[in-house]
Image 1 (cartoon, rainbow, N blue to C red):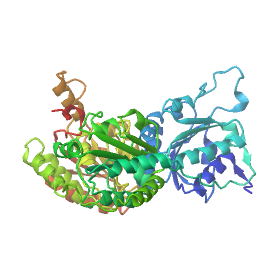
Image 2 (image 1 turned 135 degrees about the vertical axis):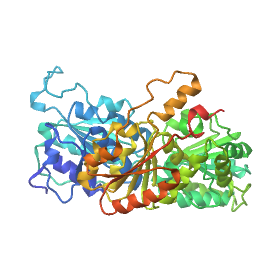
Image 3 (image 1 turned 60 degrees about the vertical axis):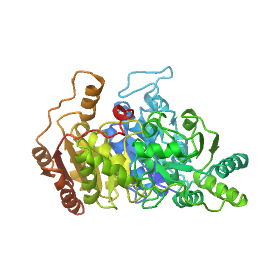
Image 4 (image 1 turned 90 degrees about the vertical axis):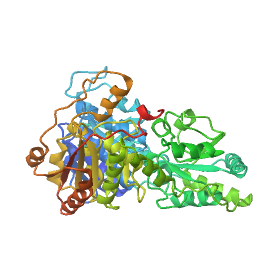
Length: 546
């Protein structure tokens, strides 16, 4: 029994009993019962300065750890403020749970909107617009049941975020029943006929390439994917969200598909097998990259059906599907093939060519410096900015769940607030930004200082929206709206009690990051500023088809 626990407390204890240790939010007049909870079981609430930041932080915490988190919001404008962050998370497969108050039941009118403070006729509809499930409770039992279902959505597969709305007067009611334990539902197995078709396709293809995405990470199926790659002698590509899979493996093509050497590899293949990926537009140049004549996929989610034509499409939990596929290949005596091509030097060849190009030489040095300066155990979060595009596409990642990139929905301003998510559980986190993106969330510097979060904000300052400036140049538009006044960074950091280091050249970046990391380990957030204008990489659409 849970004597003395409110409905809000029971909702939070549900999260805590199932692994969530941190959630993010802002207190508001209608959601105060969340903040009244005093429980060793409930996750700790990190108070942020804007609701959008709560969503971004919960998103990145999941990407870094695989544990779902939540944004705790007040009704009306507080909930509306998180929609952008929820969109990035939902489209990227991060199961952020929005737990919001709604206006009190006692004040509502049966015929609809009455003019109550923060009232909305259908608050959950904002989240349904993404295809998410919205559950609006009307009593205590509904509130707990909705939280149970939201956790099941978050666990997947595939993991999905959702909305839970509870009237403020219901949130504060006493909960006297036991807080339930939720058993995991069985994962979705593969159709044996589809597995047989996929095995047949693999058996009759001699030049297979694997494409691995975040679904492999979520299913904890990295070693199964590695075994399949070595069995088939297949080079391995990863999506942005799959970066870090098969790190150091000789079959890993550790370079983006947007570069010509990787595109040529795909052109030489006779089959592409996509595993655990949505195969989205940013990863595939709007599906106009060179594709082999035959294609197959093993993943969950209906979106992939609308990306390109597949000869075989297996809908299944990635781990179960790979297990079934391995058994089927055993029965067909597909045991081990030698690699059909050597990709071990491909990354080096790509970087050497880019380093020899005066336009991109400094960017290659930038990638090397960040890789040298930030530790493998730390997280790296990339914003929508030229310097971040280089890190997101070209840095070599030593493990999964280290690199996070806001290319799901493409939300500028992601990295700085998102960095609070992993940092809240003690993971030193690097936010790679331009000078424009941090302006969306400068208030979160106060959160970082107040919570002593181990965050380093790394800014490439080109005094504007550098990528958009380049877009205007390429497409023949006048350069308008892209030149920005930027703060005096040292003074800005000083206002929040955060030390700022300015570096004068790219060769100094790595050492500055090492110093910042040492400060992070003492619970001191840091900022590192480098003023430079980098040429955009080929991972960005204006350069896709040069």
